[in-house]
Length: 292
Image 1 (spheres, rainbow, N blue to C red):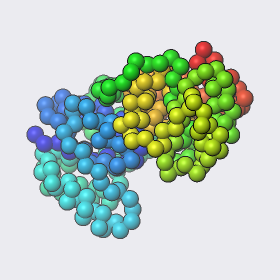
Image 2 (tube, rainbow, N blue to C red):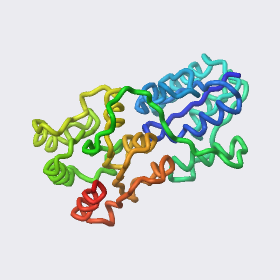
Image 3 (cartoon, rainbow, N blue to C red):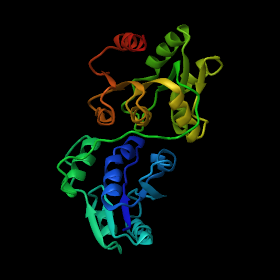
Image 4 (tube, rainbow, N blue to C red):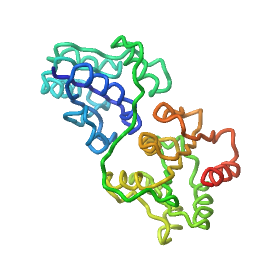
C-alpha cells in the first residue's frame, strides 16, 4: 500500500497539525507515508525521525502560472504511483492536480470553514476517514543530541510568519533588558528574511554575553537549541508549536484579531497572553511571574 499526503500549508505549526493524520494512516494501512509539502515547513528536519514518514518532497504551491503549477504538481504526485493520495486542502487548482493524477484512490478535504487550521485538519481527518475518535498525538521526538535543559535558558521568539501577530520590537527591547538583569541566557529568534525588522534588538544586544541570535544558524541547530531551553516564550508561531510538541514550558503571546491559539491543540499546558486585552507593562510582569 502506497500512501501520499499533499499538504500545501506554509507554516511549521501547520505541518505539526498533520501528525495525527500521518500516524492514523500509517497505523491503519501498516505502511509509511510519503509527503509533498512546502519547504517553509522545514519538514525534512522536523519529521526526520518520525517513524510514520518515508519520503518528503518540497513542492511549489503559489498561485503564479497556475496551469504550469497544476502540471508540475500532477507530475510530482504521479511519481509516487500511490494507492491512496490525500490532499489536506480544498483548493480547486490543487484538487485538479490530484484528480488527474495516477493515484488509485483520491481524497481531498472540504472547504475551509473553520478559522483555526489546527482544528480544521483534525476535524477533516475524522470526517474523511469516518473516525469516531482520533488520537491527538502531536509529540515530537527529534532525537537530536543536546545537553540537559538549563533552567536559565530561554528561547525567545520575537517573530511570526506573517508578522501581523508580533507583540512588537519595542516591547521585546524592554523585556530582554529585564531578563538579562535576572541572569537568564537568551536565544533570540527571528527569520533571516526579517532581520531588518529587528535591527534595534540586534544592534542593542548582539554583543551581550548572555544573548545568542539564531537567525544565522541552520535549522537543525535551532531545533537543538529549543531542546536545550527550559522555556519557550514569544509570539504564537512555529517555534511555539515546536516547543509544544516537545512539551516545554511555554508562554505564547497572541492577537485574537489575527491569530488563533492553535498551539493549544498540540499541548494544553501552554500559557497564553492576549496582547489586545493586556497592556505591554502587564505582559512584562506576567512573563516574569511565569519564569518564577
